[in-house]
Length: 116
Image 1 (cartoon, rainbow, N blue to C red):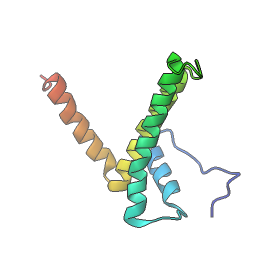
Image 2: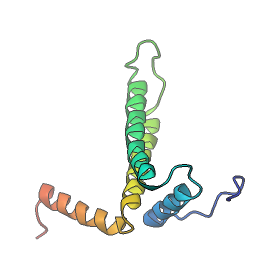
Image 3: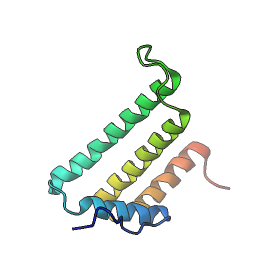
């Protein structure tokens, strides 16, 4: 079991950090297998909801609450969505980096055209 007071060493490399987070999440989880994978995918919905809550809070759209968040909060929540999505992708495949790079290339070429 990992000592909760001493966090594991982390990496600043995106994909190494995603692997570190994936390993950490897969250690000592109460639910495993396909159910754990599905729950990890559902975590994305929770994170997207937090983006919506932050945007509503930053714009004061809830008259009962007023302004409760900043645009920095929105940025942080968007980062959480990206991290959660990349960890979910890593959960589906150990080749997450290659899958993502290939997909990003396809989307970029489709949107911006093939490089000259």
